Image (cartoon, rainbow, N blue to C red):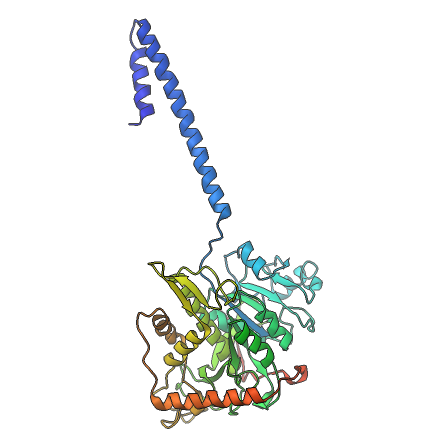
Amino acid sequence: MTESEDAGALVGELESQSTLQPKSLVAVGVLTFLLIFSFFSLALGAEKEAEMVASESESTDEWRAFSVVAPVDTGINVYHDHFRTNETYPDWLLDELGVNKICDLTFNGSWQERYEADRASCWDSLNASDIVYFPGTKIIGTSPDANSDILILDDPNDGHGSAVTGAVIDANPDAVIFFVEGFSTEAVLAAANQPLVDIISTSFGAPGSVPISGIESGTEVAVVEKGKMHAGAADNSPSPAIQDSTAGPPWSIGIAGYAEEGDDQKEIMSGSYPDISADWTQYLPNHDDIDGYHETSGTSFATPRTAGILSYVLQSLRYEFNDAGSGASTDTRQGMLVNGSDFDGNPVLISNADVREALNRSAWYPDLGWDPTSGTMPISPVAPCTQTGWGFVNLSNIEPMIAHLNQTEQLPDRPGDVVACMNANQDLREAYWNAYPSTPNSGMLSMIGAEGVERRIKQS
C-alpha cells in the first residue's frame, strides 16, 4: 500500500468516529493536506519525467547502424516493391546527404498510373541540382548529367540501373541507396563528394576493355582522396581487366563473373585477371512494373552484388563497435570506414585497405565441377588468378570477413603462388595507370556492357 493510500485509510477511520476531539480535527486537517500535497507531487513528477523523456527524444541523433551504397547507372524504378521500406530516414541523414527535395510517391495502381499521378509534383519538376528523397523507399537519387528523358527514374527503354540496384539490395537489404543517374566522371564525383557514401558501384565502360580513358579520375578521387571503396565491372568479354578504365585502376576492385549455383566455374564471356569474381546470373527487378523480375547476366550485376556484400560487412561492424556514422571522412572519421570502439572503450579503426585485404583473403577457388555444356570455363589448377583474380566471392564470404576484421577468427594467408600472381597484377595496374594520362571523359565511349539473354519473370 502506498503512502497516499495509508493516509486515505486513516482519514476514513477518523471520520467514522462519532465524536471528534479538537486534536483529532487537527490531525484530519493535516492528513488531508498531506494527501492533497502527495497527489500534486505525483502529478508534477510524472509531468516532469514526461518532459525529460520528450526532451531526450528530441535531442538524440541515434539511429540504427547503416551503410550507404552509390550505384551510378541509367536510372532506377523507385516504384518497385524491391526498394520499398517501412523505415523513414532521419532528417540529419537527409541533410548530410544534401537532400533538397522530397517526392512523396503514389503507391497505388500500375507503374504507369503511379508515374502519371506523380508527374506534376515530382518528375516534371526535377533538375540537375536536385538530390531527392523518396519516402517509403530505400532510395535517395540525383541526376547531375541531366541528359535523360525522366531524371532519376528508369526510362521506358532503360532498365539497367534498376537491376544493378536490385543486386545491391539482395546482398544487403538494409543498405541506404544514394543513386546517381549518369555515365560520366561528373556522375561518379557526385557520389564521391558525398561524405556518407561508403561504396560506389559502376557497371559501364568501353566495350572490349579497349585502353581508353573513362571514369578513372573520378574513382581515384573517391578512393584515394575520400577513402571510399569502388567496385568496377570488368568487361563482358575475356579481355584482361588491367587496362579497363572501370575495373583496372589499382584503387578499384575489378569484378568478373562466375556461374554461382551452376557449375561454379568462370563465365567465358567475363573479364580476365580481375580482383575477384562474383555471381554472373541473377533474378533482378524490372524497370517498368511494380513487382516483376527477370533473369539477367553480366559483370554489371556481379559488381553491385559485391558492393552490397561489402556494405553488409561495414554495417555489421559498425553495429558491433558502436559506430553511428558512415563514409570515411578525414575530418570526422580519420579516413576510416569503421570508426568506433569496443566494449572496453578501446578505439576500433578499419580502413579501405583493411576491408580489401579481408575480401582478398576470403575469396576462394572452386573444386573442379565443370559442365562442358554450361558455357563456362574450368578453373585451371595452374595460375587460376589469371582467370579470376583472388577467387570467387558470394554471401558465404560475409561472416569470415566480419570475423577477420573484428579479430575473432583470422582468415588464413593465401598460398604463396596466389599472392605472387596478384602482386604482379597490382604492379601491372600501378605501372599502367600511373603512366597513362587521364583525359576528359567522352560520353560516347561509356557504354553499358551487354546484359546477356533476359527472361522476364513475374513475382508470384
